Length: 167
Image 1 (tube, helix red, strand yellow):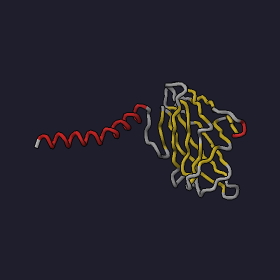
Image 2 (cartoon, one colour):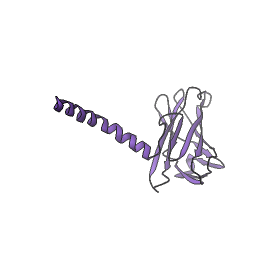
Image 3 (cartoon, rainbow, N blue to C red):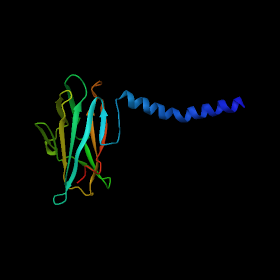
Image 4 (cartoon, helix red, strand yellow):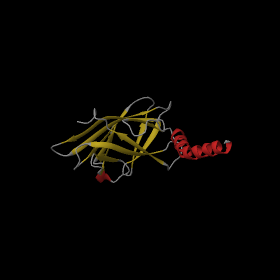
């Protein structure tokens, strides 16, 4: 009887191991509330404010609020070509323009990174536009940015628009 209980415990442990490893990875990278309209990654709070498509021009506009949760200012380095909008039909779109504070980047500028100095506890607006959207609404936005602890390592953040945000 004891042997069966030990085998059951080992089997349960083997089944739970991937879940525990995934949870540990998320905690170590500072991931909280993944796949929602508010996500915290690498001590930056990403919050969805607006997900809209202009029906006349088929231009999508996504506005996010980014807040550094650190005590000191930090550089944010966004990989602009990794940043994408995804519509309800699961079509992915590169940006037409990316605006953060006074920094404006256009796709045709062919710049790889947007650099911005985030001030502690001070929200900064990130506005992303994309043209020729085919779907009915933007479902999520993917932001790729550099890890603050390891230069050259990039993190992906997925922020979903809630039905209250969509126009």
